Image (cartoon, rainbow, N blue to C red; front, side, top):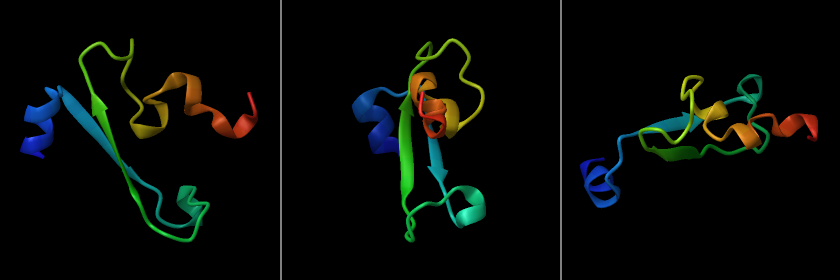
Length: 63
């Protein structure tokens, strides 16, 4: 990941997968989300991949 960090000057990143229906997998395949993170990109970055973009976090409720 050094190339990614140096190219985009990342402060960090989240990596997430949904493997299995109990883990919220909705399509029968496996993929990985790599989300670049920057200091201050969210007020409170805790919560991992699901809450990286707060305005999209609760997508399942139809809001």
